[in-house]
Length: 76
Image 1: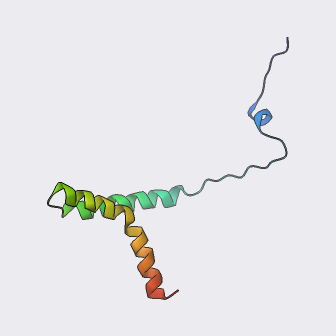
Image 2: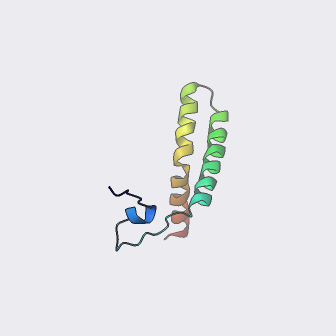
């Protein structure tokens, strides 16, 4: 009987080239820090649980508003 000693190279389909899709770690980290800061900002002024929840949701979507108003200001 033969032993099957496949390496990682043997498991890849032949004829296809794989590209590295990394490199967004810095932007993802910056977005996360901005999200945490926005969540703290919006939640600290909340008087009730539901206002705190609304603040959390605002922290999720504020980049969309930022881009919208920036494009509106630039009239692109």
